[in-house]
Image (cartoon, rainbow, N blue to C red):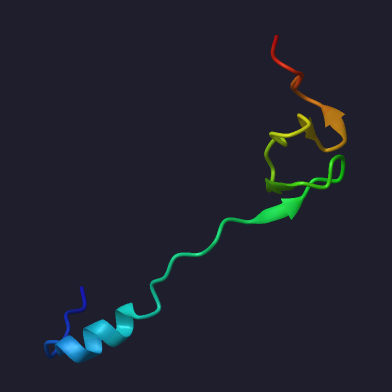
Length: 61
């Protein structure tokens, strides 16, 4: 098993970690209602996924 020959400095460690960043979730436009939705999930506004009604979204009584 390989071992490091020397200790990494704090500056080198922090510059290595500088590429760790959060990314925004993959939002796309719903083809049915044209609202923003997460990819590969049911649209919360209309209830469609891949052109099919998956859940019934209606007005609450």
